[in-house]
Amino acid sequence: MKIFNNIFLGKKILIYGLGKSGISSYNFLKKRSDVYLFDDNSKINSKFNQKIISFKQIQKINFDSIIISPGIDISNCKLSRFLKKNLLKIHTDLDVLFSFYDNESITITGTNGKSTTAKILHDVLTDQKIDSRLIGNIGNPALSEKNITKKTMFVIEASSYQLDYSKIFRSKYSAILNISPDHIERHKTLNNYVNAKFKLLESQIRGSCAYVKKDDELIKKKIKKNKYKGKIYKVQTSKFNKKFNKITNKYFISDGNKENLSFILKISSKLKLNKKKLIKTINRFKGLDYRQQIIFDKKNLTIINDSKSTSFASSENVLKNLNDAYWILGGIPKKGDKFKLSKTKCKNLKAFIFGSYHKKFLKILKNKLNVKSFKNLQETLKAIFLEINNQKSKNNIIFFSPAGASFDSFKNFEDRGYFFNQLIKKSTNAKR
Image (tube, rainbow, N blue to C red; front, top):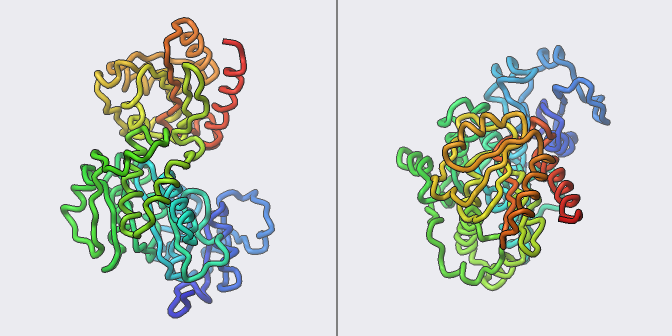
């Protein structure tokens, strides 16, 4: 554990946001520093009440650091003015992790596929008897891990928000899987969003390695304009090497998951991992909940739950490989999002839009494919099952990939995915 010149040790620190990362930051630092807590929810009721301070008290204290949860938007929160005055003091739990530990880490970012890639990589390392810890945006707070040794390796899924707020964090191995317009409502411009992702490469030092998608236009443009200290490996994701012939896992049919796998193979080669064990782990991988997850596969029907999809780009990776598919989408469309599949690619697809934003989706899709709109998911599925039963074609696919944020009707994409699964259970158990 690093102690010398640690910028968080014995300091006066404000932790803003008491979600998972905020609470784990408090538990990690409470005996190491003078820590204060604040959350926008004034009704928050927890065992940390004695350390929660008021907005007025915050103005009177000269904090050394402010550790902010990634979910907080500096431009739209209760401490907005205070934070803008103290931008240089803002850090994340990733900064804290880096300040205390000098372990090797592999950090994965990108618009799509980072959770899946991070999870596969973690499984691969674990199966090779490496003490791997999966942390970050995937849901395991960076500072919640125990019993860390010198041999521990961190596999980190990092969002644009986490990278944007981080000041000192760096990773020996980094990967930017892809970049397409996303979170523009928060970052304000596409350029800001790209810059946030590339902080991962900018922070690297000599001896570091960065892996980027070779044929991604936004990535190519950024790399061409800048120089980086780490060695950059451009990953070819459109042509797959011979190792793919040994992969029989149905989960990797889609181009998106093949791209994720390209990065896994490239990083694994650099780490000199055992190839036989690697292939075995990949073939055993069952996928993450609500991320291109096959939840039903019998007779003439396959149902895929991809509730995690919040943009057209993430849905397109699977759609372009599907035939006779019923695509269910809805939610809150992303600002500036575009559907890029051609009319030819869409000829065997039917789109079923649900929810209050159906007109916005309809406007984007109506000239590309057959589209129908419904009030909710229940009505959508009822119509699809009725159509499948009437035509009795050999193979049908129901692809639930909303391409929009879930907050119009659900707490998050997990809540939306679970709800869809429950509806499917009722529908498939009923006589059709």
